[in-house]
Length: 291
Image (cartoon, rainbow, N blue to C red; front, side, top):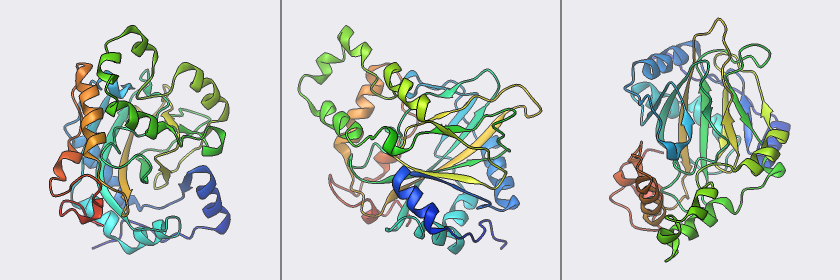
């Protein structure tokens, strides 16, 4: 079996930058074969064409829980594990794959944190996303990549905690029915926050095989793809949680209740597959997941 992941070395400077900012560009992490297989998986998947309003996305296609043998091979390869070990102390648990396709004149996601994707773990526990563009991203031509903001520019330590407390508050359901709730951006950044985020954003170019690792506390958004030689931008994202992350059905139920109260459907039911866990149990104890 051929390798899908290249062996790369993280410099001390890169490691420190990741610890401080919450994101890192990993150059030539994947082989051409890996990209070809992920491109096929994403293109052939049965994705939704209209993203629910609660997810605040404007994509040509978006699909959650897209994974097969190629995904398993990637996170099982030693080169992949060794890359993550250079950056993250604890073992990571793969949770899901997500496929995206963005065509010109589509905006993608607004600035957000991955609240929905990590809705089944405690607010303070760690989760990570590995974003893999399946076409070249050129910031001087078509763009189509991602913009992300260093944690120090706009710390997010209270973001998850606030929402965790809100969904448990006895008056929150009533508040959701008021006009005031319409001015509170629950799932993504407000217009005022976007002013700060836009000022401090980072946008990189990517060659095919590069990837972006970011933790769940990093603000990020899609960068629209312009008209040009590429008809669309496809990307595949792998989600992971820290092996010490704890299950929270309270968070899961509360967030999904809010999404459904808006008349939207949830796009993933991953958290509900962890039926062998109780509130506060380590995710790593579930038979459903793989380290």
